[in-house]
Length: 356
Image 1 (cartoon, rainbow, N blue to C red):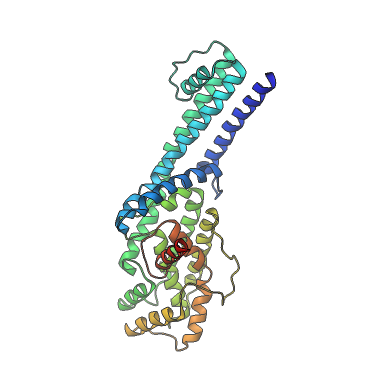
Image 2: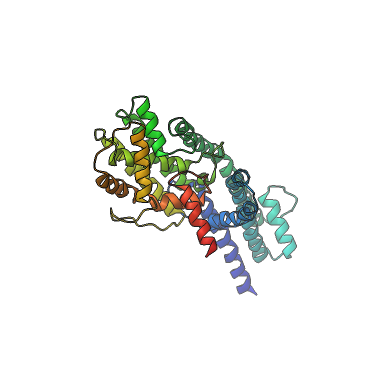
């Protein structure tokens, strides 16, 4: 019997420690670490939301449902942590002080929620109860303290996404962005824009890996998304580099590299597979015909293009291959609104997979 109680006490302690580590990895650790417990909560919540969205008759209805997914899943985390801590301490109380199971659960719940309705009769019991109360208050304080941080990061992200609608339309496209800057005479003076978006990519690389729930916090408008905005900027930078006849801008290439590195880090957190060193001539989801059509639209708007379309296609594909897979996968994961060259083909791929 003594051996059983020792094992039960160790099991309870292990549950408490594992839960605390989960909370630390999720909110405190300043790096992208996948936590199994948090991942399980989000996956379970996503399965329930998928049932709801599968019955939606339009994208707007799906978007309204998915707008709740990130916040609800985030708020479920401390509830799950509290339940696990309470269960772990109930095992400890039962193993050490030999009350009935009902008394152990009541004592654990009273301590965790600091209600104080369950009396303790020993100093050691008081100390264990105090430790549980501290953990319970700490878990709640952790979420409350990090909510302003989460929403501040979301606000910074969405400011740039909203401004892009002015520059690239809704949904944003690379062609629309290039044409609009050409019409206002700013096509060869975009270094500041590429620099701003390089900083934006660095910010989401930091925030969306250390606080993974941010990826699922949607834009205020159902037709905007951080991932389709990222795709439009990267495609615009790639086309400007590959086919538009303007002087070379190193800042544009730095923005491209910052962008695909950020998307790769976020994809790695969600265990999305991709080739970290793709060949420049590797396959991409953009067909040559789509590229030619985009070039024709640019030429029709008067945008100066390089004469060699073959070299332009090779250069564009050589940039796109670095972010093609992760862009489409993240668009599907976040159920992004349909946008050319990103979520439009990620949705088709998902539908095709469902038919198989």
